Amino acid sequence: MDARENVSGAERKIWSLIKDCSGKLEGVTETPVLEVLLIVSRVLGIRKEDLFLKDLVVSPTEEKRILKLVEKRASGYPLHYILGEKEFMGLSLLVEEGVFVPRPETEELVELALELIRKYGIKAVADIGTGSGAIGVSVAKFSDVVVFATDVSSKAVEVARKNAERHGVSDRFFVRKGEFLEPFKEKFASIEMILSNPPYVKSSAHLPKDVLFEPAEALFGGEDGLDFYREFFGRYNTSGKIVLMEIGEDQVEELKKIVSDAVFLKDSAGKYRFLFLNRRSS
Ligand code: SAM
Ligand code: GLN
Image 1 (cartoon, rainbow, N blue to C red):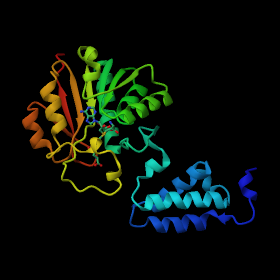
Image 2: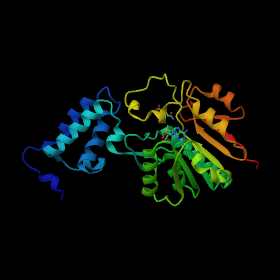
Image 3: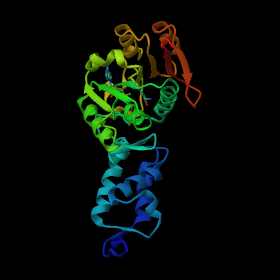
Image 4: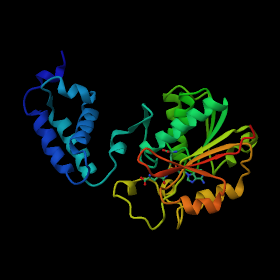
């Protein structure tokens, strides 16, 4: 018996609240009802699916909290910062303000990486700009590699570490604060594959409102969006290694000038999304 079934007094039927709240998110997101359901289940501390089970009611305190969060979302604040988590590769990852929210395209990078890990029996991988740990933590979770992850943001390092613990891979996921692979100089020779979803947005780009709440250093890659790639390939000798990086869909021609032997792969939406470089000798 759920105590909520019998809450009496000024409580409000949940469905009328959900309807009103969804109205506030029209035009802000393409999925207003879903987002409200997620916010409501978060506040009530129940699974979204369980909202349908009973004719639940909401206490005045809960209603106030829900309305406050919906207003926040209506102002463009990202849904996943409100929820405090984002699902990636079937894993619930903690996210918070100051940390990039993982995107579905990046799951395809992880799938590709896992195929390569199996194919070549790779044991040591780097994840540059790990953010929430999305790439590194999931690669560690779904294979037996050791991951050396870096990020320039202290908040990202903190959150990535928590996510590694959350998914039981902290013995194989090492994260340090710093640029590129500088924090793991002593491991560089042993790293067989370098993964990254770097910032690649042009500084002049007009981004949707919610994206602008995410950290600038996670998004912008300078005037043409390519600063990260230029600097990385200028600094590191990648011979003997595999490199797999996410890119912007319109960056292939410019990237060919930076890495002439790179191969470019499309995502499932048919857009060029990954730079692949196999410099292994065997
Ligand atoms: N890998 C995560 C993901 O896919 O969800 C985060 C990707 S986010 C687009 C880019 C990340 O790179 C941010 O967390 C940012 O702080 C970090 N970053 C930017 N420049 C960096 C650099 N030179 N070295 C290390 N990290 C960097
Ligand atoms: N795809 C991201 C966006 O929504 C950009 C990701 C990146 O710069 N790595 O803008």
